Image (tube, rainbow, N blue to C red; front, top):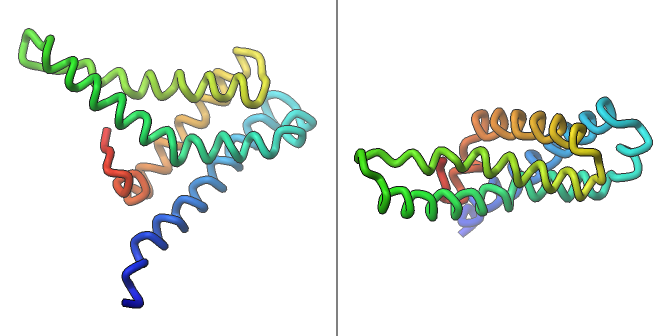
Length: 139
C-alpha cells in the first residue's frame, strides 16, 4: 500500500525538475538574447511556457503524430509513411508561437529562444526518457 504512489510521485518530481530546468534555460536565453529587464519582467510567463513545453506539448504532439500517422497510412503509395516526420517541425512552430506571444518578443529573438528550448527539451527527454514515456507518446 505504501509504494502504490511511487511511479506517480516520481513522475511529479521529474515534472517539477524538468520544468525548473527548462524555465532556467528559457530565462537565461531571454536574458542573453533580449535583455535583463525583459527576463525579469516575464518570469511567470517563462515558467508557464516551460510547463507547457514539458507537460502539454508532448501530449499535443503525440495526438498530432497519431493523426499524421493515420493520414500517412491512407496516402502512402510506396508503403512508407513519412508524414509523421513533420511532428518535430510542428512542435517547433508551436514553441515559436508560444514564445513569441507569451514573452512578447520579436520574431528573430523568438526563433533563437525557441531553437534553444527545443534543443534542451530534446536533451532532457533523451536523458530522462521516463518523463516522456510516462505520457504514453513516443515520437
